[in-house]
Length: 194
Ligand code: GRF
Image (tube, rainbow, N blue to C red):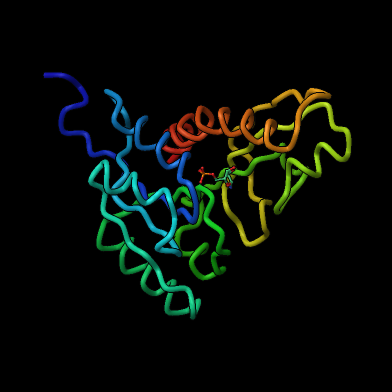
């Protein structure tokens, strides 16, 4: 009997707000033979997130969270996480800040992908700022989530060369392509260390 039979996979929730291209790459990698995880829940703070189509396509449970009130929103999130026996959370373009309470409850089990070489360029408009500062490199980072924005321990990074001819759009495209490779790798690394 193969070794993998009967081994319970890590149950992952992915939080999105937008296109969900990282969600797609995580789903595709979860479907590979010998994957250690499965995506069992997609959470979005908005009904309009384009990435929700992947939940539909791959028949993954999705939940839209009403964020008018943070306390109630996170209460709903915690209920869903429990219901779906979620072990790990991947933030993938999720535009809401998690409270300390939620972060503490899932300490070391929430990771995020950010389109810069952290600790440089935390926050928004990373590509624009990197180009304006004439950086030679940009890239992407997967890191643990702590109470400070984009400041948790780094899990993996990938450098991307910035060419003189790169527009913000071009650079964003190049970095995003690397994000899709980096995120599944980083998730596997986290799982091994669980
Ligand atoms: C990515 O660039 C990610 O690094 C950032 O938000 C973007 C999300 O893209 N946090 P997508 O929704 O996964 O396509």
